[in-house]
Each structure stands twice: as C-alpha cells, then as structure tokens.
Length: 96
Image (cartoon, rainbow, N blue to C red):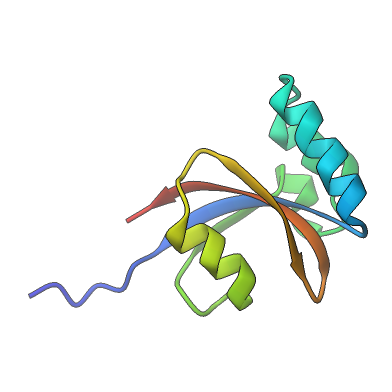
C-alpha cells in the first residue's frame, strides 16, 4: 500500500506582464540559462536560487501553478501562467 503523497520540485520565473514572460521564454528557447534568467528577471525571492522552489506537494502552490507542475511534462518550460502574483514560467525538475 503506497500512502506517500506525490511531490515535485520546480523552478520558476515570476514577472509582472505576459509579454515580459513570453520574451524571457523565447530567450530560454534560444539557449539562455533558466537559472540566470530567473536571477536577472524574477520578482520572487526564489530568484537568488535560480528560481528553484525546492520540493512541494499538491495544494501547497496556487491551483494554476499546481496544474502545470503535477500534470504537464517535466523538463519543459511552460507558460506564461497567470496567477494572482503575476506571470510565471515554470519548469518541473522532477515529480514522483
């Protein structure tokens, strides 16, 4: 019997506008390092860790964020994803 709740680790970049998120996503697609872009642009305190949010379980993040992390493919930059905080680019590092 597996009673362990699913968990995941992700990193993100949080910005104010959808267009800013889209521009950063294009730079990453062209080879810019996600962590460097997070340190340079993200408004979240996780920016200093390259956007890394560490491990968390479903329900610890807002619903739109959880939907990306727990339902979409890992190692892909998803977004822009709108939440009450702004626009996120999200990459799930691992999910069990």
